[in-house]
Length: 171
Image 1 (cartoon, rainbow, N blue to C red):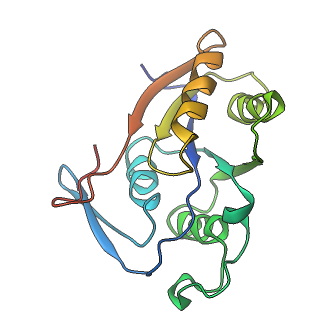
Image 2: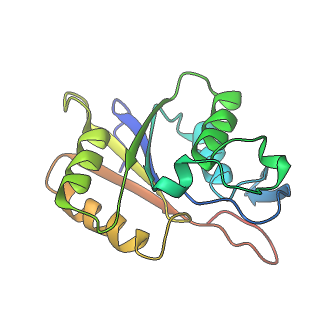
């Protein structure tokens, strides 16, 4: 359960871009969101509903670089740059912390993500997770982080994913 005096943090694994840059619509109850990236709808939903203060992004080298031959609709940006630009359009004072992961993932990566989530430890953290992005091992890594946080005063508030077809709804 969220602490109304705590800081609202979103944890996500950054994804590479799909081949084609297309805008899609997503719904959650009575709200509709338009997005080109699969990570945008949940972020926008949480910006509207809980007022995110921080986003912790687990990123690979591929999500931090501009891909050769990518669709011009991505505006010449890396996936991380594009996502953050879209977030800043909606709310420009959200703190973003990017933690780069390399393979194989090491314990220092987990420690860096936990520190990014907890910050200085003076405030209770309400953690929301977007389970949509990342590589094949992202869910396992995210679950390991949650397990390590369970005894550290972090409230796991909710996990989200998207139904792409046929309804494109946020769950």
